[in-house]
Length: 118
Image: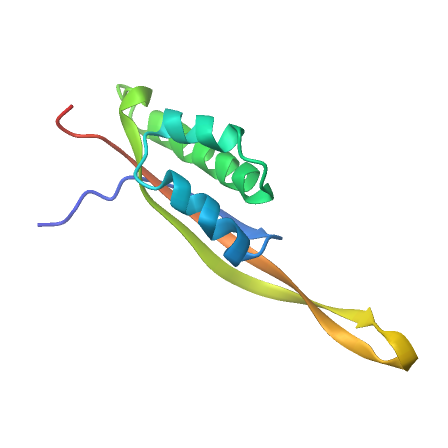
């Protein structure tokens, strides 16, 4: 039997390191959407702002797809922080040398679903 997919929102090519965004995502896993938004509002990390936008988009997608859905019953079924491409830049150093600077990108995928049985 196929499992219900949920409502998906994806934001791609965000200039933030996946290793810095993943700890923020781990804080809100499996929480209700309203509770997760309140937690993200009070976090100082840049990743919290990026995840908050994607989460709001997923909630809006859910409410658009199913008009009789209760917003308070939505929870975060899955949140994924995937690695994107890297921008390669030159970092000039002393004595005429140069290093390579990698600006990392990430893709954020949030899947929300309705909590059943409550």
